[in-house]
Image (tube, rainbow, N blue to C red; front, side, top):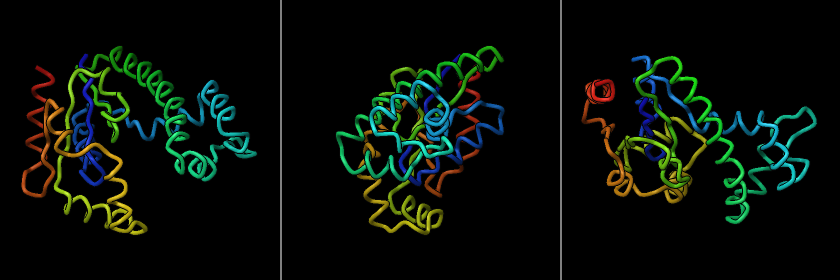
Length: 197
């Protein structure tokens, strides 16, 4: 079974592309969603997070205290690296178990969606990579529509923490153009046929 990574910068539309693959019956592992799930449900990771960031990492009901964690970890590059060093291996274990289950179901391929696929090193365990590309003005406009609480400067700050689009495209095996000029469905259907051949 092929394990295909799919990435793209904020506002590129990788979630839309993933939904098209899901309509075709392709299983998609949403790394962001699963990371949140793993942080809340993986007992080993919970213990490691509490040891690293204090007992207030989880509230009285056992829920992840995102406000505390973001205040502690995202304000300091060393603390963010520490958080990632704990979370990424746990997500890797979760993805391995999820992938094995999809293989048992007989799927020819699956997708792993991750904004930071290259930055986190997660691409190393995958067979091929798709990058979803959209030009910066298109991405900014999409994010401003989707997240009205964000400012253009917020978006640029997020983009500044992600690998550049040119480098993502150079490192990818396939590029899906979601630039409002190319049709998405034919591109997805072509990749789907290729991965199933």
